[in-house]
Structures are given as structure tokens and as C-alpha cells.
Amino acid sequence: MNHKRLYVGDLPAEVTEEHLSELFAEIGDIEAINLVRNTKHGLHGFAFVEMAEPEAARLAAQRLNGRTLYGSRLIVYTVPPRSRPRTAPRT
Image 1 (cartoon, one colour):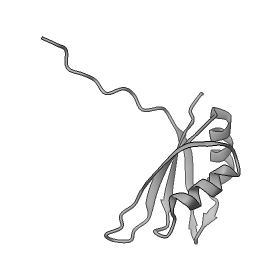
Image 2: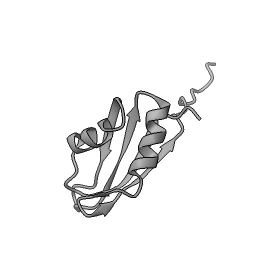
Image 3: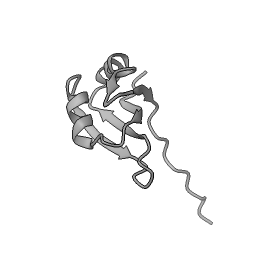
Image 4: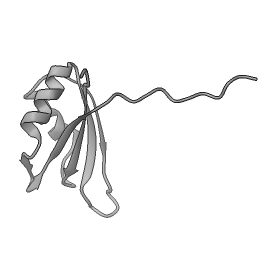
């Protein structure tokens, strides 16, 4: 599989993009981070991290899944790339 994109779940409310950048940079180069959280209720959030290389994404999932960050065990796994949105046929 050539997946470079990772799902990172169970992120504590205090985690920032900078925290994720430092954590994933230990494994390889990062192309993008998209952090999503429920700030209204202070609940755990999630992120999508895109690594520069598929091998780095595979290693990150292997090494970081289950790692504890601010008292929370991370869920990390690779996800397939987003498919292109379908467009309506022109008439």
C-alpha cells in the first residue's frame, strides 16, 4: 500500500499541531496536519497527518499507535487517499 495519510485519534484537548509535528517528525517528513477537535466541550479530538513517504506513514502507524500522550493512548493508522469528488455530468 502506498498510503501516506494517517488517522490519529483519541487526542487530548491540549494537543496542538506543533505537538503532532514534533511527534511525527521523529519518524519522517510531514506534508500536512489537519487537527480537528471539539473545543466547545473539551473532548478528545482527532487529526489527519500526511507524511512525505508511504514508508514513513507505515512506520508512524506502527510506532505511535498505542503511545500515550498527555494521559491518552493514541490510535494511529494509515488511511487511503481521499477520492476525488464526483462531479455532475454536463448537460
